[in-house]
Amino acid sequence: MVENGESVTGDLFGEPSEVRLGDGAHLLKGFALAEAARLLDGVRQVAEVAPFRIMHTPGGKPMSAAMTGCGSYSWVSDRAGYRYSATDPQTGQPWPAMPADLLALAQSAAAAAGYPGFTPDVCLINRYEAGSRMGLHQDKDERDLSAPIVSVSLGLPMTFLWGGHKRNDRPARLLLEHGDVVVWGGPDRLRYHGVAPLKAGSHPLTGGCRINLTFRRAV
Ligand code: MD3
Ligand code: FE
Image 1 (cartoon, rainbow, N blue to C red):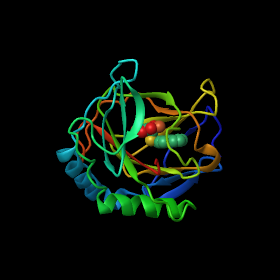
Image 2: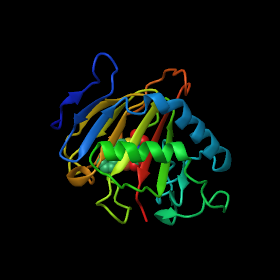
Image 3: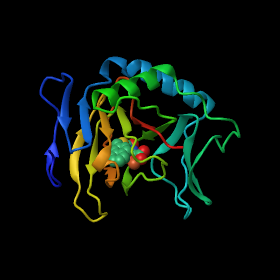
């Protein structure tokens, strides 16, 4: 198990491996590597219908990462607050359906981590460019907190900050690389977490950015 303040890196040879981060958190190192190009094609299809955009906090501050989403709902933030919405406020249209390859990957990762029968209704997609970050927060807008969240990292590597159950708990730092999948559930579902500023770089599949997918059972 990883204690706060420790750091974790991948294994030397890039083989898929599983690391238990906590009682409910499973790092599936490289789990999505073979599927990565297909997943990114799915992201491009989604973004043609629901473009990446910078949302604003209810207080009016622009967020650092650009976002879009697919599935029956996606997460939106504006002056009125945070919520899951069945329509994209930018187009007034329903969010694009979740591409089958994305859904299949999320379901197989959840099952591999001990959460069979995971049926996400949301895939939130975050796009980070050099300097983009995400402050420590909890994900608690989802109705059923017994369902896990499956996250998939694509493109440039970043340092994930994995906190405790209080905002002030010092976070562990974890390098998440292209193809890594983490399944967060059970006692780790409500941990504070965030992302350190993305370092500039270039990735063959994503160029200068990192794409993160989070699959959720939200509504
Ligand atoms: C741990 N995204 O979209 S993914 C988010 O890299 C979010 O884009 C980050 O935090 C990103 O809300 C982190 C890893 C992650 C996602 C959800 C979690 C870790 C989590 C929920 C509970 C605990
Ligand atoms: Fe989060």
